[in-house]
Every structure is written in C-alpha cells, then in structure tokens.
Length: 359
Image 1 (tube, rainbow, N blue to C red):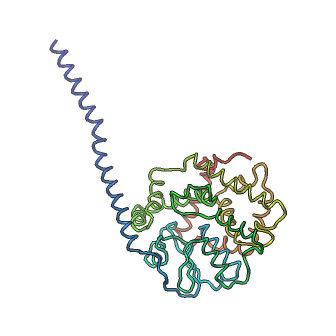
Image 2 (image 1 turned 90 degrees about the vertical axis):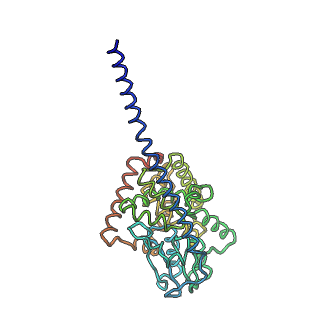
Image 3 (image 1 turned 135 degrees about the vertical axis):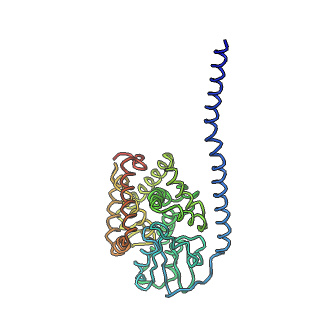
C-alpha cells in the first residue's frame, strides 16, 4: 500500500512539473508582449510629436528653378503629373528630383527638407515659384490651368468637361491605409491595393533599424507599421477585400470600354485630356502587376479599351515617362529583381491571382 501511495505522489509531482512547464512560456511571453506594445505606443507618441514639429505646409519653400517636381518613378500619382508636364511641353523646363521613398533603402521623403515642402511626407510635390502643390490631382489641374503650356488638356464642351472631372475623381488614389479600401468612389484605390504587397516586400531587404527609423519619422505611423507587420507576420490581403477590389476594377474597365465603343479616340472625345492622363498610370500598373490580360482579355473581351490602351501606350509622353528609370546601384538592381520575382510568385500561388476569374 505504501508503494502505491509513493507512486501516486510521483505522478502528482510529474503532473505539477508538466503544468509548470506549460505555463512558463506564457508567463515569460506576456511581459515581452507588454514591452513590445509599450515600445510601439512610444514610437507612435514620438511620431505624433514629430508631426507637430514638422508643422503645417509652408506657403513658400526654397527652390532652384521656377518649376520643380519631386517624385518617385514607380508612383502612379507621380506618373500622372509627369505625363501632364510632358503633354503641355513643360517637362524640359521643370527640374525633376527623384526621391527614394524607402523602396531602395533610403528615405528621402522623410528628410527635413522634404517635410517642409510636404508635412505628410508624400510624393509628388510640384513647386512653382517656391509655392508647393501637394495633391497629384490638384497638380495636373494646376499644370493645365495655371502654367503656360503648349497644349490644352481640357475638352471643349461642358458635357465632356463634366465627364472628365468624374473620371479624374474615379482614378484618384488616397494613400491613407483606412481609406485605401474604399473602392466605391475610386477604382484607383483598388489598383493601388495590389501594389502594396510588392511595395512592402521590398522593405524585407533592409534591417529593423531602418524600419524603426521610418516608424518614428513618418507622419503617418500606420504606413511603416503595416510594412513591418507584412514582413514579420506574413500578413496578406483578405480574400474578400481582393474580390471586392477586382470587382471594382472590372466595373470601371467595363464602363470605360462601353464609353469608347462609340468610336471616340479618348475618354472625353477626340482630344487627349486630363481624364486620359489620370487613367493611363492605372492601366500601366495593371500590366505591371501581371493582371492586365485577365482584366481586358477575359470574356467578353474589352476590345475598345484594349485598343485605347495601346494608343496611350504608344504616345511619346508615355514612352518617356514609363521607360525613363532603370536600376543603377547594386541594391537597386537586387530589390528590383526580387520584387519582380515576388510578383510572379504571387500570381502563381494566388496571393491575388486566385481571385481573378478565368477568361
């Protein structure tokens, strides 16, 4: 009997040890989680302090030339402004300054000089006679209305001008993370949503130090935080959001195809307007992401929109804007190649390709 009691006591001790070892990781991880949350909130608080230090947009900034454009080559918003400058013949007179927005290891847009031009640290920024204009849609309107160009980018009739304004607003992109999933008013947000994975993937090539620098310095801490979580936790776009975004892209392209079916050359008639400039970078981004053929060639084929896309692509301004940049440094070439491979892998395994219906 004593032997049975001794055996039962050993079993109880064994069970107590197992329970202790089970609880130990949880007890150890809990303080680490609290510490991580504390660091996160400190960074966000520091970020908000820096936002106040950056202040509001300056009415006047120093400029080398009368007209300057601060841009990033792979930004749809920047491409719109560059297209507008090319079409009105002011690209040669404009001083172009390429800013790395974190894609290739530098954060030029977070430097104090750029924060004075734009406290929200976004591109493009158009500076005319020392006055910065921030929003890309406002910039292309400013290029057409306020600058003395060689061509008009506005249709002659009031009806077509109203249509142009609607298309410009539909193609607009709001960079705020919470607004980016609002596809009802803008199919530009739907296109940009699929670009976020490639953009975030490029940050995997840099250490945590640069990511934390962006988290502390960026006026909107959710942008670098989303990129950190994307790489650490392998967060992906929700399937329901992907389907909604692709449905919005399908709806917009179907509407434009029907609009072009009456034989018009461009979206607002027979002349090239701001509406075409706003739409072209989004079509180019669909091609760059590898989903253009699924959007235009799926049954029924959008032949009018396909021919329209080919006409826009062959314009001299398009060839210059979309083919002007090539990776030069070693890190630029490495990141450029890796992002392309990630895009091809995403299409293969269905990160977003699985949500595209078969033709």
